[in-house]
Image 1 (tube, helix red, strand yellow):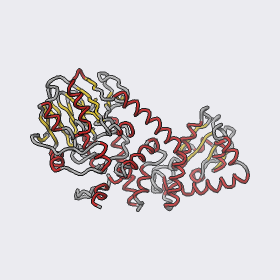
Image 2 (tube, helix red, strand yellow; image 1 turned 180 degrees about the vertical axis):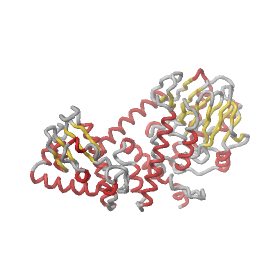
Image 3 (tube, one colour; image 1 turned 45 degrees about the horizontal axis):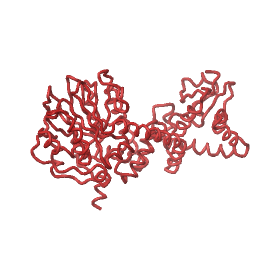
Image 4 (cartoon, one colour; image 1 turned 90 degrees about the vertical axis):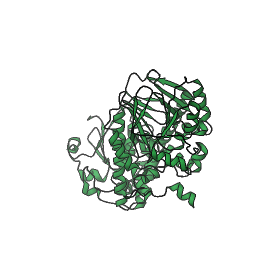
Amino acid sequence: MRSHYRVIYDEQCEVCQAGVSWLKILDHNKRVAVHPIDPGILHTIHPTLKVEECLRELHVVSPGGEVAVGADAVILLARLFPETRLIGTIAGVPGVRVISRMLYRFVALNRYALSKCRGGACHVVRPDELVKRSGLGAFWSCYVIGMIIRMPLSITAAIRDAIERIKRYVFTYRKRMDLLDGRLRLLFLGGMPCDVVPLIFGEQFWTVIYDGVAIDPGSPKMRRSLQRHLSKLPLNAIRAVVATHHHEEHVGNLNWLAKHTGAEVFVPPITAKLLIKGFELPWARRFIIGSPPPLQAPFQMLGEQLRTTGGCLEVYPAPGHSNDHVVLYDRREKLMIVADAFMGVYFSAPNPDVDSRSWIQTLERLLALDIEILIEGHGFIHTMRPDIPDIPGVVIRRNPKEELQEKLQYLKWLREQIEAGLSEGLPICAVEATCFPWGRRHAWETFINDQLMRVFSLGHWSRTELVRSFVRFSESDAVLPLLYQARLRR
């Protein structure tokens, strides 16, 4: 370790975190070791290092024991790597070095404006130092600098994800996959322009048939692909048709599928009320996926249990993604059809009817169940079980309960961030920015895709809606108007 350049940085600083991420990418020969500020180890790195000074500026200790500080430390690091050596050389020219130091000092003085605690009390190093606050000018300066530093990484991640989405779309195009000796069937659906969603945003459409129960049979625009699957299924393969919640890609073919199979329709009571009276969709969802037709009789209310061909599915309320959401659980198989009550750990651009506080409570209840197979509503299965084969782009080899726990912790962290930001009087856009700090990998990896969703849907799917999902509902459970509803009324 003594042969390394040792970098001591403030892990609360977004700009510092972004710089360290680039440092790790550029350091092909492992010449640099990075250390968050820790009073307990500073003296072991170099006897002259002091917490107060390290908090003010970046410190770099060379293998020979020399200490570079602030802009000089950045210049030293830039000169280590071929890709940045020219920048470091130019920044080190005497006249330019003065300007570099001035810019560095401005950023250093205001870097807490976008820290993980937004300048509030933190658990690391010196809470009294971190109480300093900066104006919104400094806030957005730090944010923009972090964005510029991370943008090449965000673009690279977006390109990589786009390639993966295209590969997954081609591999699963209108396929049927039979698992667990035929008890579990996955019918991949699509249509025009529904196929835009898996290609651009990565959400596949499918109907899950489990032990004779067809769950979430797609929208009317996916009906042709569903009919092709239906023509190839054995007779009496479906004895019941179920919706997990009222969103259009899950309920548009309920009555149609029941009519063509002779199966009964089962829906949660709240879902039935929504579907009978109908609801207005924003143009993006209406155009791409299609509005579901009103629910027609006969149909049954979904109770606490649902009989299947060979057993029983337990029904659990799971509000959060929507107020009417339920999940289906096979206790014997330890299998849960979670639909959209999971949607990945870091799903960051939700519909504007999400209630994330209820989602936290739902996840806490689901974690009490023994789950070995978790089936999402948009093309993913999470399991470690060997009887589920490896299917590229579909089967994710992770422990489902660990992922549920990770999502729960993420939502709790978001709740703390939002509550703290609002209590400090930050505007909603600033609160949103603090929920996606550049130091967190998922924030910059999903940045391009999330912004595309925001623009494409005129703000209907956005990070802003994720923030609003924690404050949308009052203590009396009176629902505030959704953003797109307000626009429609206007």
